[in-house]
Length: 88
Length: 191
Image 1: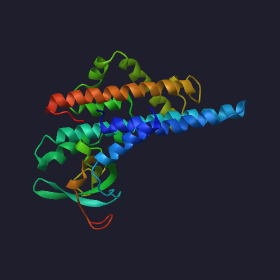
Image 2: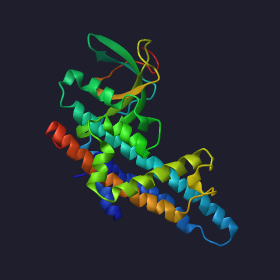
Image 3: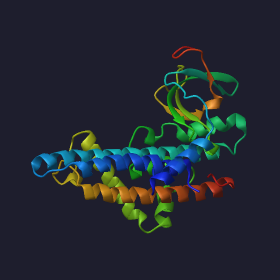
Image 4: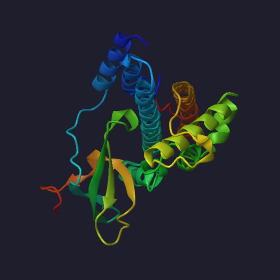
């Protein structure tokens, strides 16, 4: 593939995606789970790879009711972030 | 139209692999010194290929899982996405056929059965992917006891080139097979 074609495809991809700020690793936030909120911590910012370019983040539970070793992905805009990294 | 994941594989992923491939070309000279240097580059090339393909597969899986989640009411979309990606093998292990089957089967179909049915070449490509990942583990853990290594401690350039062709073929096939499945499942083309 010619280099110009690669550059054009990259440009189109960046233009197409929604732009949100990068999600800091270790940042904590809450997510609505039924009638309560649960606390999660960002493990990885997956970027705008979701359906229609929505940003996904990989998180883990930080409260004692969840399995802290298991990670899963959620849409970034579902997270209500805490003010500071590593705090609730 | 390719998925975002395939688009990345065919642009940024390809560029990263080409950059390392070009280092091999510029090492000049003859003799054991050059052979040692190129052996190290070949091993690095194999590890990079494995990791780039793993990223492609993870991104494709996330994209597909999110497409399924989006057909649900907004309030439970994240729960579906979470369950489809929870403890995913591709997040911790490499993209060997076993891990790929385990993760993609969660999306509601028999992944390898569909991939093999899509193209006669895919069974051989799957075997090459298995070999690539065994070599990747041997190099990363510096343990060449696996029978696949045949007593060697370095891969050959032509082997990595063949694995890369297999990965290119599989990437395009995965995109098509997953897209077809998602369209059947949700009634909407995912990309």
